Image (cartoon, rainbow, N blue to C red; front, side, top):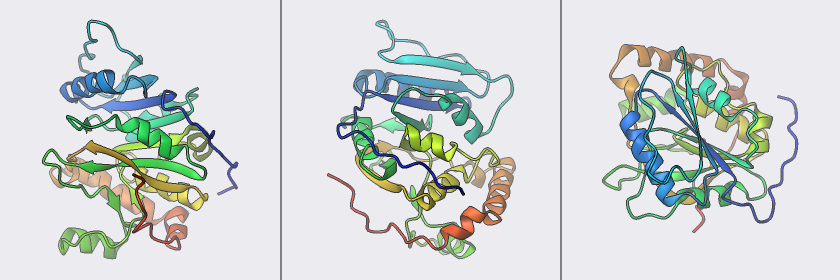
Amino acid sequence: MPPLPAFSAPAHASAANLVVSIVSHGHGAQVQVLLQALAQRCAASVARVVLTLNLPEAPPCAPAAGWPFVLELRCNAQPAGFGTNHNRALAGAPEAFVCVLNPDVALLPDGADPFAALVQAAGMRGVGCAYPLQVDVQGRVQDSERALPTLVALWQRRVRRRGEQRLDWVNGACLVLPSPVWVALGGFDEGYHMYCEDVDLCLRLRLAGWALVGAAAVVVHAGDRASRRAWRPLWWHVRSLLRLWASPVFWRARGLPSLQGAVRPE
């Protein structure tokens, strides 16, 4: 990988300069709730939302007063992969920060705007990506922080049901990056169709010398786990793992130190 340009965020990064990319795969009801929550509680943080409808569905209904941010609606003629959709949505973004957000993410009922804290963390010197703590609807912490997916790590996780022993990457349900970092990395690797794009992005980011940090923010995300219930997502998952294991990024990342024990800012 060629050397990437140095990036230093402004001393007082503004949370209002954020574009959020959401891709819906028939998640209309969840998207409607999410957009309404963003409108009610995150208007000071979110400048623009790009909503990609990967499958045919009705567009969201705007509130009576209209959306407090710019809402761009994109409808795919043919379904595209996770990385491809987000790369298209965030291409040429003029905002200082970009966010990848799953449609099944929700805000805490009485919590603070998580995006203000995420942008603040992403704007710190040397940081390439900030992510929130993820909990389920009962408030239980979810396993969004993961170890490098080696065969041993997957065995420990899936068969022995042991918790992660390392922190090497985080899932892509909610990620905020400075736009120069996103551009320098080239976004997601579109060679991955549905799984491992987030693993690859986190590893490339860290290999380039940028920090992956947890922000003082919490979102609700139970996770779909589709690859455990259907053959097609399972095949996509296996194919992506094989591609990851064959990549130079994976083998170089084996030398990275674990982020376990990193302190989440208050």
